[in-house]
Image 1 (cartoon, protein in one colour):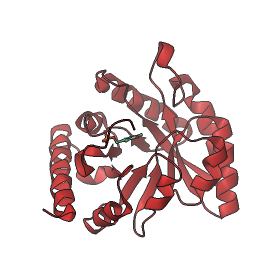
Image 2: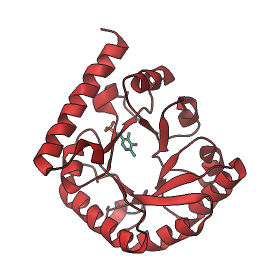
Image 3: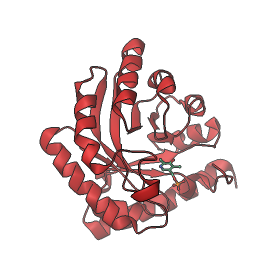
Length: 228
Ligand SMILES: *Cc1c(COP(=O)(O)O)cnc(C)c1O
């Protein structure tokens, strides 16, 4: 089997899971954007995915992300981002999903402005409590202030919310809460309609909750080597 055949088969299986989750939830497939997370995989896989009809890829590290830039694919940066790398990322990312502090937002805006680009941003929300809290993402009560900051910056467009469900916990209450927070946010920022949630192991629950964007890596590309 060629790599193209393997990716095509995996993609078809993921599409079948999405279709079935949509049917269960009474949703239409075209309400949902599949982002294939290509981190650790070669650029040639991104090109094959594009040829198979994928429109969006996700990456979590600079400069690896830059090496996956591909004609015809929108690139979503989904990883933790140091302020000093923000400018570099704005030169190629279409969307930064992991905005979690005002200082990062301001650096992204300066970078985008310098590059003459408009970068879409999601506020990353963190639902961990206790010792794990705040590793990546803002707590729910910090969403609005950060969203206001992003919306006020000329080169950034506020598009919505993103979360990574806490490891090993039932993701359903988290995704439901994210949808409520999205409704709250849209009262102030009607254009912030994106809800990015759901990965290989839990995306059916994200579809059920109402997510608009799924970020799926391993189910399409295969298991990544450990320690990433
Ligand atoms: C790697 C990654 C994904 C995809 O995870 P899989 O389990 O491979 O589907 C989604 N979101 C983020 C932020 C990631 O880093």
